[in-house]
Image (tube, rainbow over all chains, first blue to last red; front, side, top):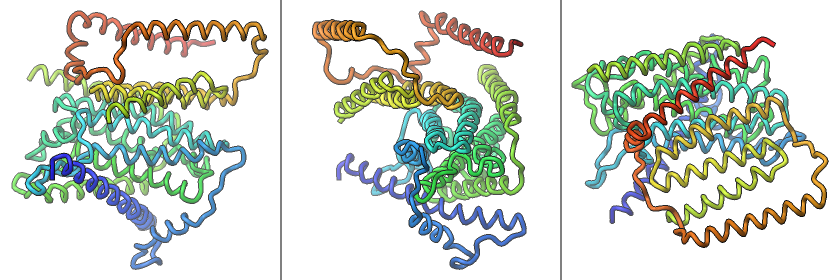
Length: 339
Length: 164
């Protein structure tokens, strides 16, 4: 097999694996979220379909599949149908450059565990997340519904504001590492727990955590779909598989953010304690453990925190997070020059 | 394959650029402009500069266009009001001038002996970009532009805050 053939095969296998893992994790997440939220609120949650309700996502999928496709009156059909596509494409594209394990040896050749190896990896993720806003904006605008429109508007303003702090919180890490490549950033955090960027770049980590939760529109930042005032926000008019795609995009974005947080701040596939096995498949295990922990925190937050008010959200984003991120960049620069 | 991709992106960017000016509905124009910016970014990527390609998306498609759309949606501009419309004579003059311009551009381009297909790759890596921007002769111009943008930002805030 020539190198080109091998690379192509590896790429196809990696794409198939990551796609199916994401789909599986998405359906597992919907079930886990409903069960965990229920426990936090002293309820039981879905527990009838299969053992412990584990088949609930399948039942949900079948139900959505057979539901009628409804186009609201006066909606822009093309853009209305395009919006979920934009959302899902950007959600799956963003994770393409995120590595999920150390390079492994397959048939004597080295394979890096990420779909695409890009020189500007982190910047690419940033660009794609920036495009993800359009799915929500389109969905809100095309539906010709006032709730959808206000949801879309809030969403675009929110993502626009928090994207800035998200990007600025990465700059310190990029300066420390001297590379945009996520694999380099992970490898700089090898060894002890104290090498993790979460400790070295604590202000950036705090800014990032808040901005990331806002970026995926989760509670306490789910103003775009505040059900008590906006019905369901930008996806009010969606039904059937288009609704399923929008939901899927939201969860895939959440998983991407969790993998990215692990890689950027929590040492990626390094266990953080010298002496523990780290190579090969162990690396993937460490990564998965950290990712699942972050996903749990997302659900935990939803069960715990009330929603922000809109003006508080804007105030916090522009007057607290951005100055903090700027100060962190300045501090990192001074440290790097003085070192 | 690069050549095929280049032509695909070139056609896409030109077609959507025509869409930007040809649309009556400003929201469609904005979406067409996003397609133009994204295909331009793809062309930058083909030229071997992923950094500029990513920046094009982050700055233009990701930030500026979101702001445009935000304003369009906030004001809920449905359709450009069909005004009086130019008279028949004016329209004829416009068509004549446009064809004259097209012929001129065609003559100039034909005389230039331009290469067909994408430009040869140039070194536009992130490091090279930074070294060029932060060294003479571009250093002072670059910094002056930054100060200009900062001044514009402060000016915008002052104007927006002014009590009526």
